[in-house]
Image (cartoon, rainbow, N blue to C red; front, side, top):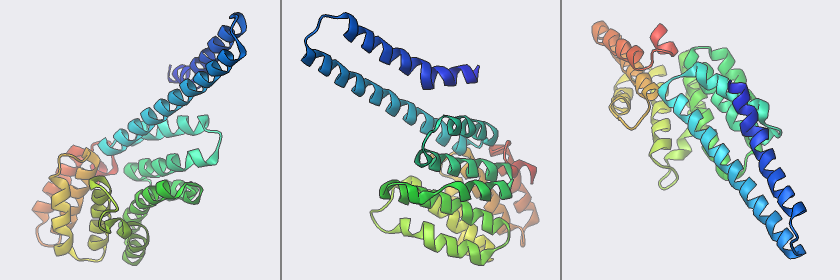
Length: 249
C-alpha cells in the first residue's frame, strides 16, 4: 500500500496534472499567448505541488525523529531516497538515517549514514543548519563511545557556533544544549551537565526522544553518587522513548 501511495505521489498524480494541461491546450482553440500563459501556470502548479510534497516529507521525518520512532523513520528515509534523482536532495535524508540508526542503538550504522551526507553539496544557509544537526549526532556517538576528546572537538567545530547571538532559534539551541550535555558527561563534568539535562527534560516543547535522552543524561550524572536516582532516571527515559536504545539500556 505504501508503495502504491509513493507511486501516486511521485509520478501518477503529477503526470495526470501535466497531461490534463496538455490536453487542455491541444483541444482548445486558444491564441498562442494564452497557450504560453497556460504553460506558465502549469509550471507554477507543479512547483507548488513539489514544494508541498517536500514540506510534508520534512515534517514527517522531523516528527518521527522527535518522538523516537526509529524504524518508521528509517523506512520513510529509504523510500524517499529511492525517489530522489540528485545527490543534493539526499543529503538531509542521510542525516535522518543517521538519527534513526542512533535512536536504534546501532552506532556504526549511524556513523556510516552520516558519512554519506555530503553537506558541502548544500547551499550555505541549509549547510549551516544540517552541519549543526549532523554534528550533534556525531557528538553523541563519540560521547557514547567514551571518546570525550573527539566529542569536544566535534562540538566546538560544528555545533558551538550556533550559540552566537542572533544565529539560531530555540530548536537549534536545544540541539546544542543536548550536544554540550553529552560532551560534559563524557568529560566527567557532571555538575555542569546536570542543569542542561534538567532543562531539556522539562521542556514540553521538545519531542519525547529528546526529553528521554535528557533523562538518560541525568541518570549518567547521578549514577556515581546515587544509584537509585540514576535507575529512576533511566526508567523514565525508557518510558518516554520505548522504541529506542534508551529502553534497552
